Image 1 (cartoon, rainbow, N blue to C red):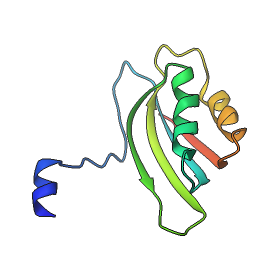
Image 2 (image 1 turned 90 degrees about the horizontal axis):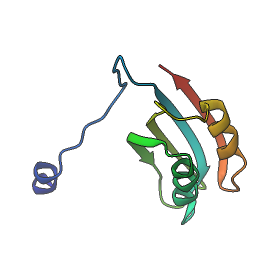
Image 3 (image 1 turned 45 degrees about the vertical axis):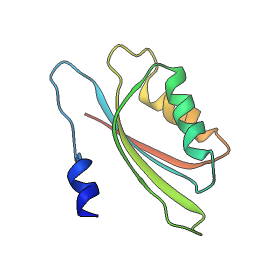
Image 4 (image 1 turned 120 degrees about the horizontal axis):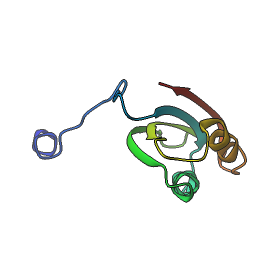
Length: 101
């Protein structure tokens, strides 16, 4: 395990700041099934939103998982609340929360 940690360091972001960027933190509760994350990220990619950092927490045999991430909404026409609503409509999403910086 030490070898992997040395080769692939992990940064855990609690927040992001840049004076010229609009960052939004999302927390998505979703079903813990194959393809669920792909459906969520596909919806995000359709709107040209860049994902900066994230953490997926999922446990075997648990029905749900939590994915939290930071997204860059700079120069994006879609508002965070619109993305949240789009994600809520996906059949794999149970809940969406977000906070703007």
